[in-house]
Length: 288
Ligand code: SF4
Image (tube, rainbow, N blue to C red):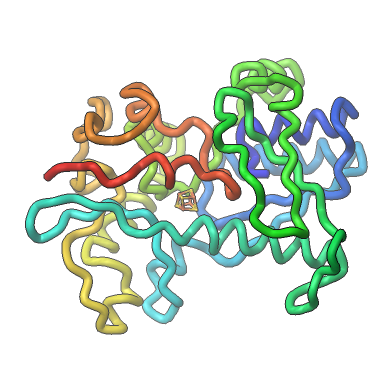
């Protein structure tokens, strides 16, 4: 669970017995979520504990610290790239796999009693409930490994995101915000505005990070990898603190997203480990 709207709703539904109870809920922490997400996580953890559902945090490190650490292995975030010839691109996205999928798989194996490198016997598996709502059903995907079977309770219930938000509000969790790294390059202007206006420290970190990665990751540079072009967190390929976030993002006409509103309003669902729409949605069509 990411502690955003849909996964919070799924956890509460399990607490109430509307869907089967969970043995455990897992939060994959990239270490760089907005303060409001961690606050919601703490509330969810306390709430679920009353129903005997432990909420565990799993982590592969701090994505921000790791990215800026010249000594850390290079893990690519989907940074926006301005190439020397003026064309634009998107760096590879390895972060979701590294910081979310890997620690979740590791935890699942441990829960089953077959930690890596032990082979998980055929027929032994974890059933993993994922908060995908009906308005985003195309994100419902298999896990890709036999020991993890994904199920989608919100789709089974016919709940869309609005229904989830209403349900959370009814249960006193109306302040739930979307979950995604503070410095996620997939934020639209609305996402950046939210951080700027609601998480001052997070905004300062994002601006600082944006400047720090202008010529690529320190580790890659240190290894002598030739990094061409300039790297940015904002899709306009401009310094984050110079973008007018109150305007629709430039270049949106060229992005294959559901609608212009989706670009402006961001991916409202955050970065789901198993079906991160962000990565699939932004295919390279941008002109210089
Ligand atoms: S939220 Fe963005 S930066 Fe964070 S893991 Fe997902 S895609 Fe990567």
